[in-house]
Image (tube, rainbow, N blue to C red; front, side, top):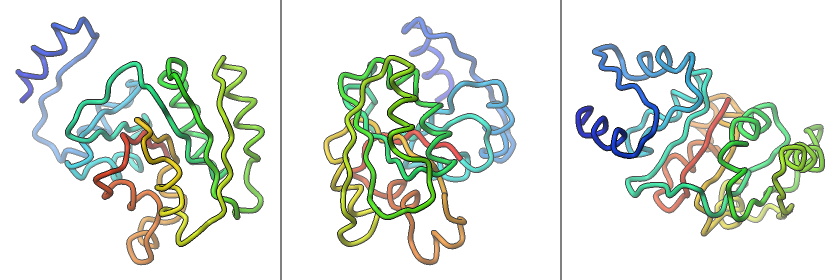
Length: 189
């Protein structure tokens, strides 16, 4: 796989480095990502959630079909939390070339950074975004999934609640990591 990836990236003219390691994959990725801009993994590999928590670089979890660049449409799942802000900052290079960007909020979280602040931040970086506020229907994750249907990329904070709590009671991060129909995910914690 490493040889095939190396050949593909060399033909694409993309700067890269292939690192071969026999360590635990999450530990190896987190170590290698200390001076990386982005970690790209397959969502089906099951590493994205752990990497989002351990690595200091944002994680782009893609499905088995490739994510086309530049990204066409992107949604930002905005709850105003620290994790969402980290993901938004990390996504700026990808969002800058998108044809459509939507800041999607599920109404109900108090005491968070207002969506207007996120929109101002995006404008400072030359990114126009539309704000969409959705009333929570069933769960937050189901409401967000409905709102982002058809998007190529979903930018969101990872694990705003503890991982154990998400595992036991469900949560937005786990939902989208396990949802086959979800767009590519850019996660940051």
